[in-house]
Every structure is written in structure tokens, then in C-alpha cells.
Length: 397
Image (cartoon, helix red, strand yellow):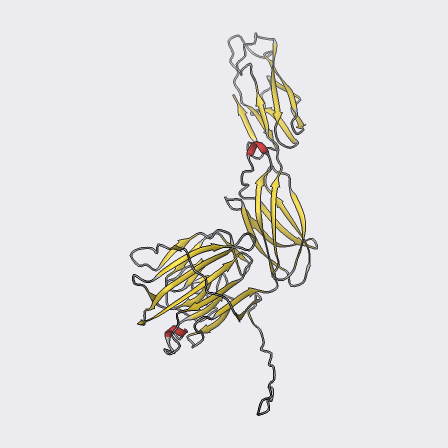
């Protein structure tokens, strides 16, 4: 407690930062209210929510989400959706993995709507969700506007406007929950619950202190594959040999992961995918920092060509040869050529090998009918296996 003398004397008082177990903090900031551009079509007939796909993976309490819901009642939800009345946070009952800029019973008329927009460039893009001119269901003479700005860096400020300070009621959150909650409802930072707590023009900034964001894309480096996305690639972040975060690339090649980084230090970011060469880079991460990586993984592009065709007539107790031409338009890649069932009448030379970038290799196929009887027909499947991510296995009959 600080004593302040009467008169004109002043004294600065430092307020403790509000936080939760994860490290989320919140504080009031000065910021203009964002404006959504695209109106969301809420699911009929309830108009209670809509499915949304943000333009980038969303990090929240160490989880990363590719899609979620926007509820009429003032929540972007990424974990578990519920359309029940608001409750204090944390709460294991849904909604979980959610932001609650103004979780209350809301209603809509022709003037109301939920809108989204995308701002900025990677790795600092923002996904805006704006609730515009919403009605308070418990008193439809009152309206409110508010927004959540979900940052690619893991931050998420809430904004409020069109609040009549004379009402001192539902417009100022006396029936609302404001805060953020983790995936299973065990941790949360509650700003307020059913309390007179907001005013017109106010903004609350939430930040995941002690964490950094690592994001980027993973593509195929081969010109022949036109830099196509590598979906399902594994991104592993380690510090001093210990794994601290992982991510998997989406179908659009993007990934994002939230990394514990209470103290600054070098981290190793490793990107791996089946049949690709693993790529690694080092990045310094610290609390609230962002790092973006654009990774092009190399792989082979081994192909087989037999201009003479695959049918061959061989007299009994004789041998015949065909030549199989292998080419590689990608990076250096090991390969193996073999008959699928291990047939003794077919020999391959050289069967295994490594084909360099841009190289060619002649493979000799020797057909031996020493054990055959007149009229015998041999059939088999020739299998070419290589470290070529797009076509790791080719079969010829």
C-alpha cells in the first residue's frame, strides 16, 4: 500500500501483471477498432455459429488449429464448440480452446452481422473477427460492437465500440465472460465475468509471454515438381538437443508451432518428410519473437523407360536381355530394381545403386528359361523403388 499526500503530490503505482499458468498476460492498450470485410454466413436455422478456416494456423495455449467456429454469442472457438450460456474461466465444459471477447447471449437483426478480414503479411498476419451492431438478447434495446484480432504471432487483442456508458449494464459486460481458455479447459486468463468491465473505444491485448512462434512453408525443390506443397512434413524444434515443439504441414504447405522461449537461445528447426532430404536451420528465439522459414526439400525424380516394350519370346533353355533406362531429374537418389515376387527366371544388373542428379543408368534385365517347359508363359511385375517423393515406387508388368 502506498501513501499519497493531499494536495498536488502524485505517486506512480505499479500494478501486477495478470497472467495464467501458460504465461498469457493482458493489459489495456490504445488501438483503433478493426473492421471486418466479409460477412459470415451463420448456420441456419439457429444462426448460432459458422465454421471458419483462418488463412494461417492459429496457435493458442501451445495447440495449433487449422479451423474453428465463430459463434454469434461472441467467441472464436478452435477446440470444442458449445452454444451454452457464458460461464467463468477456466471451465472444463465446452467451449474450450476459445477466445471470449464478449461471451454473452446475443441476437441479430438486419443491422447486425459477424464479419472477418485478413490484414498484414506473414509472419505478422492478423485474422479479424468483428461482431457488428449486435443486440443484447436480455435487453434488445442495447447494442454492442466488438472484435477479436487473432495474430499469427500468437497475440490476440480484443476491441470494443458503440458502448453507451450511461447504461451501466449488459453493454459493459455485466452478463458476459471476457478472456481466453486452453484446449481442455484447465487453464485460462479471465479478464472479467459478469462484471462492469469495458467501455467505448477500449482494447485489451493478450500475449503469450515466454513463447515464440515458428511458422513457414515446405515445398518440393524439384523444378519438375513445380515447387508443389509438401503436405504432412514434420517440423521439429529443439533446444540443446531436447524437442520443445513440433508441427505438421497442412495441405497448403503451411505450418505454425508455438515454442516455449522464456529465455533467449538458439533453436534448431528440422524439417523432414518421407523420401526427401532432411533440412535443418538454426534460429534464435526469445519471448514473443517470430521466425518464418521457407523450406524447399530436395528429392529424387527417378523414372524408367523401356522403348522395346515389356513382352519377350525366349526359346526354352536360352537367355535374352532387355535394357531398362533409368533417368533422374531430381537430386541424387538411391534406387532398387527387382521382380516383385523374387522370380528366379529374371536377373537384374545392377539391381541397387545410386543415381546422381541429372544422371542416366542402363539396367540389364536377363530372362532365363533354363527351367521352363515348351509353351510356358512367365509373367511378373518389375518394381523400381527410389528416394523419389512423388513416385517412390514404379511398377511395370
